Amino acid sequence: AELAYNPRTIHRTDFFPGLGWMLHRKLWTELSGKWPLLYWDDWMRHPDQVKGRHSIRPEKSRTANFGELGVSKGMYYKK
Image (cartoon, rainbow, N blue to C red; front, side, top):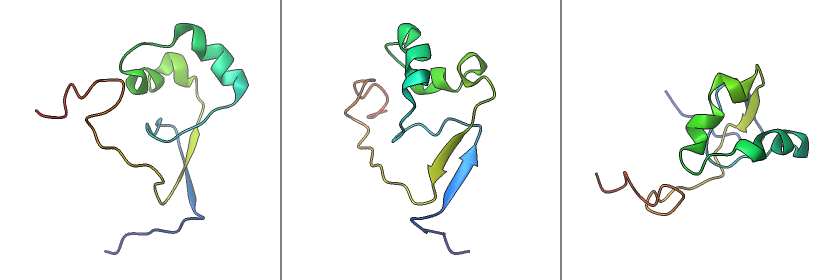
């Protein structure tokens, strides 16, 4: 099967997509006081943060991840 890469198509999901996202100021105000130092992507997927909300993501990704740089300091990159 061919992969779809329509840059105008979006998908709605209840699973936090991880890289390349933005949020409303109201949600940042809610979350910023309890934001974790590590594993924030897993934390964002926890029901205490999700609260029934959904995310939208583009069909064609606009992010790149080199793995070694970032909050986790490449902890799992070379394993």
